[in-house]
Length: 250
Image 1 (cartoon, rainbow, N blue to C red):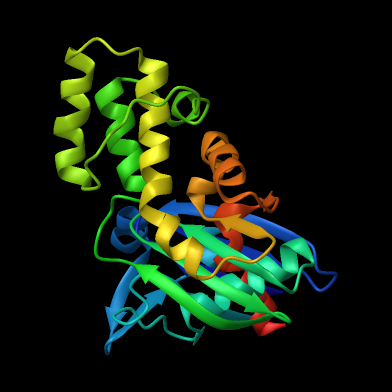
Image 2 (cartoon, helix red, strand yellow; image 1 turned 90 degrees about the horizontal axis):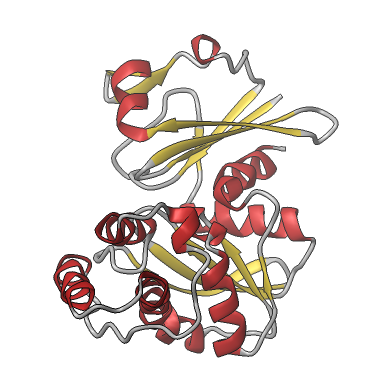
């Protein structure tokens, strides 16, 4: 059994790949994971995988947000972009595409040709095109993420691309009396506006959309309409990095 671990900013994703290639998944809140299950030993993060109910894997491969500062003891650590490309190729069977990965606190666009990364754009300095931004905006609108992800028609124009100032602007639009559905659509379009320049630079005839934000069906529709290419969401978009780690270790 191979264990792939994606140490994300909001959650730790674990994929277990059996010898027959079948996968099982586990997810933990990042802060709780470090507090309850990890401890630093001689500069390395030691995690008792057996105590987590993950058995004793033959090999552990890790990646993810914070990989530069968290050295997981006993694991092979691979670059985040490599893990996501491997996971996307494995899940979709495609070898030529634009990979869009929107996580909890960063966004990535990767040009993939013949199954290899040839160029990339990242934004890890601003949370405005990430899951954290969507969580904040949904809280302002007093709806859950599932409801937010339903709306893309008649979006209210939101000009602020800052996660903090965006809340203030959205509250102002609520006061103006705009329907929640139109405000939610505006929030989803704001995500698109943030990633649009990166996508245009690395666009191919197919976008593979991964990360937790890929569950936002409204954003999928917006991407297809605006970019005029099909958008493929793998079966397990949030576990894509962890799956890529398993592939790297197989």
